[in-house]
Image (cartoon, rainbow, N blue to C red):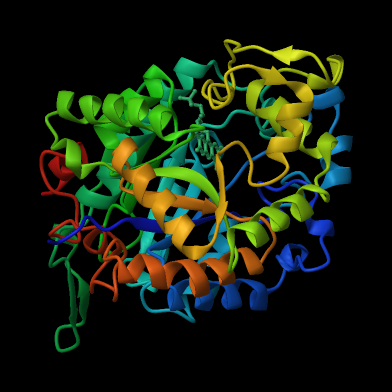
Length: 448
Ligand SMILES: Cc1cc2nc3c(=O)[nH]c(=O)nc-3n(C[C@H](O)[C@H](O)[C@H](O)COP(=O)(O)O)c2cc1C
């Protein structure tokens, strides 16, 4: 019997320690070398050796300065600062791989659609169609201040802006240049037929544009669209636009509820619910035996920096957690930042949160031997209905290397992970028949 295969992406960011606050202090951690090409090239080669579908690159515009009202704690602990632009490392990794794909976070408030669409088309060309975009709306006031605003727009307004942004980028990617516009006709001296390149004239509530797209059509035109918001507005957005959704949640049952809601949203937009590929965040610690994996977790935990973790959580929730005692319980709050941030745990003390977050972030951690890990991942998929996982790292690169060397072969033996790459673009590797968006996805409707 053919078994459903899981998709796997590495969950990373162009910074130190990403979701593991303080683990850059671990003697075997190299994530502080993120400023070098070699670091990313080595990682890309390891991921491709393990047949990873992609690397999902988070990005946060702005600094975590809610905790204590200043960026000091984040700066001390390297809580996602310093951080470099995630798009810059895509060609670096693409140049040493053939199949690894890239889901890169691009934040709508901080780049106009005109220049953003050009950046994505450029990368889609350079990677031969291996680029995806994680559409985010931003959640830090510090970022808004960086572009001259007093604070970020309200949560639901950010999604309204995002819907209109999508109209503009779809038009640039799908409508501006017809297929066949580029002739490269040496005899007649015509590179591009101007009759087949069209101005996009958009005059909306948030965006105004009268321009042609600057790039010729790339393999996918629109990149594979990721989204990672789990509020009702976020899920409705995903149901309409996303092809892949990245969700938080602390156990398989929580994931199952989000998966059901997301598939319902896709259906409500006339789409096949299975066209939404849903990834859950998870941290895996694998070792030759269950006991060794547990010991490894304890060792990693000893390097966590509570203050750095709380700086992260304060930014996600918009609550200054420096004002609470470590034994105080954090209840679910209505937040204007990431509404789903606290739902992962329900209620827990500030200390519990800090200690948990310091290894792998807000998602669950599973430990064990390769067989135990395979059992747990299979079970998780069966209960949750997820299509795959984004694996947060602990200590880099051993976190990825051990998963590739120990866990992947067992998953392959069981037939729940592929034995070779599917040819084609990112979209095709995800099981879609065509490299470009197809109806009823709203983006396909823009194509001439
Ligand atoms: C698993 C997960 C990953 C996310 N990754 C990012 C990210 O890399 N950058 C970012 O700006 N926002 C990120 N977000 C925030 C969301 O994209 C979204 O802007 C935020 O969650 C607010 O929407 P919501 O209330 O609908 O969840 C992430 C959220 C989740 C749940």
